[in-house]
Length: 108
Image (cartoon, rainbow, N blue to C red; front, side, top):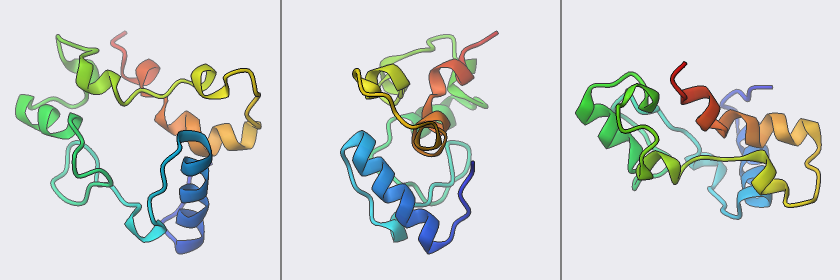
């Protein structure tokens, strides 16, 4: 399930991130143009984007140093978040799965 960029959806996302990751971003600030675009970042201190741009890569998974400390600090893992308490599937799909980048970025 993907969220559109309307206020209601960003509010739900803000609440979910707070519940599962322990930080809150105001809904109006939830927008990131990603690693390959210059523009808005959710986290102005993101260590990944400058590295990807500097190296001219499509993704971190294309880097010979992958996984480095910078990108590893951003990995999300369902099992680590659950810590013995099962996350409802709908919440997993909304708040966790989109950020489980380790598997998605791994070179095949």
